[in-house]
Image (cartoon, rainbow, N blue to C red; front, top):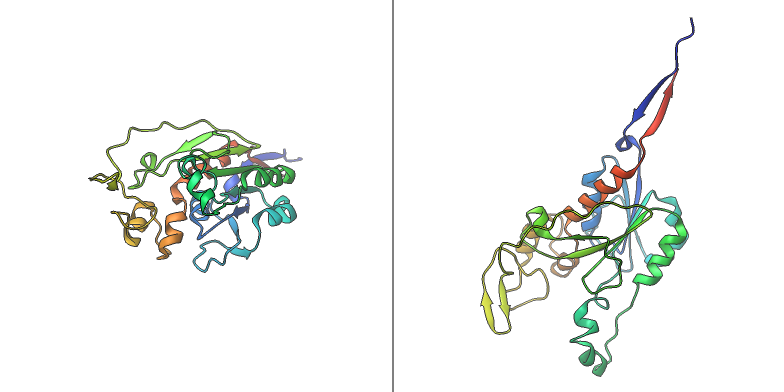
Length: 245
C-alpha cells in the first residue's frame, strides 16, 4: 500500500541564513542578529579595520560598493551608515561652526538605500533622530532595560512589523549639561569628559563584552536592538515546507 505524502513545516531557524552587517564597526548589530537566529552566518563590511569585530567573516572596504557587488548573496541586510552628518545638531545648531572650519561629513543614507533596493533583498537601515531614514521603527534602551537611552530609527525595506511600546524614561542621563550636573539611571555613552561614560560603563550599559575600544564602543549599536529587529523579520517569513514520502 502506498504511504501518503507527509508535509512537515520546518521553522526558519533551521535555515542557514546569511546576513550582511554593513558599516559594521565592532559588530553590535551582528551580535544581536546572532543571538536572534541560531546558526546564522553574519558578514561585516566596514571602511576601517575592525579587529574586535564579532561576526563570522569581515571585509574591509566601501560598504555601498560591497552591497552593489554582493548584497544579492545574502538573505537579509542590516546597514548603519555613519551618523555624524545626519543628526539634528550637525544640520542645525552646529552647522555654522562646521562650515566655518570646513568640516564636512558624508551623507550616505540615500546611496545606501539605492544599493539595498537594487539587491531585491529585505533590509533595515538604522540611524539617529534627525536623519533621513524613514521612521518605521523607533527603539530605545529603556525598552530592553539598558542603562543607555540611545534612541534609534529603523527603516524597513521589503518587510514590515509593528512599532513596540516605548516605556517612559526613568530619569535623566547622568552628567553635565549646560553647566548643571544631573544624576540618573542612564550613562552618556558619547563623547568624553563632563561625566561621560567610561569604557566599562559603556560595556555594561550596552551589554557589549568583546571590546574595550572607547570610541568604537560609543559608536556601537546595543545588540538588544538588532536582536529585536532580527526576531521581528524572522517572524514575517513563511516557514519552509519539507516534503517526505
